Length: 292
Image 1 (tube, rainbow, N blue to C red):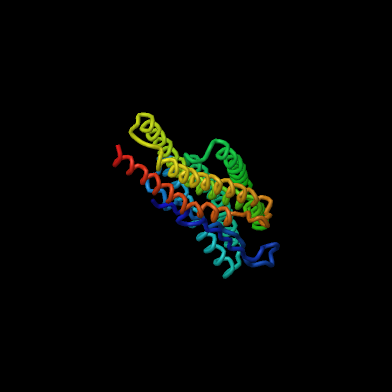
Image 2: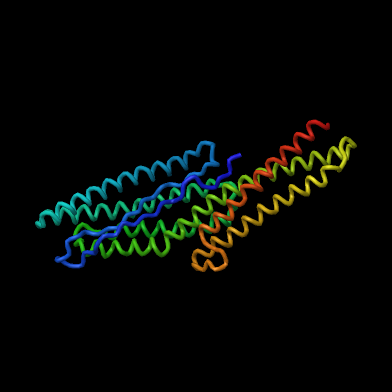
């Protein structure tokens, strides 16, 4: 059973240039988001149509943004080489398009994360609603913010407006993204545990029925079931600890072992007990087949 929690982590990248504050400044400035959608090695089944569509929307908008950024770079370089009014206006137009597309990219990326989370059967309703509220607030911000750029805005105005998006990303969005990625990992792990618990419950029912019918004895099942329950409890404890750790990203107080990486490491430590859970259940199943 493949239980690695993440095959690829989100890549955050900012490319900041020199700020343009007056006509004597020559460089156009921007920061970009390079966003790589997260998938998991443990997910071997086909994604639903909803998830497929969200991922396709993300890929499309990423391509649109990359083209807009390339056009912006070309316009910037042309203006720096020959600082005419016409080339400056072209640069202004391309800058505006790039900044709008960047906000839109954040909207579809956050939406894709939300969709991925919604499809995690391991997450309960409270966990989903908690992160959905945070994601929705970020989507609302970027959806509204992209309308702040106007066709008549100067370069200075465009970059002043752009700083709002940058501050939002650095101050809040990146934390929501981290929690979202954690919740996806948590949902994968909890989903596996819950599936194993269903099998465990079925096996206990079969054993109880066999004992009642005189076909089985409690030994060695009483010890085996106790061992399996201990493994299950360890998984539940890991999930609880990881939830406590991820919650600390908003306070940014990692003195007690909190934070995104620590939370993921705690979930990763569930790999061994998950494998044991699977092996133990298989062993009990095979024993029952051979002794009934």
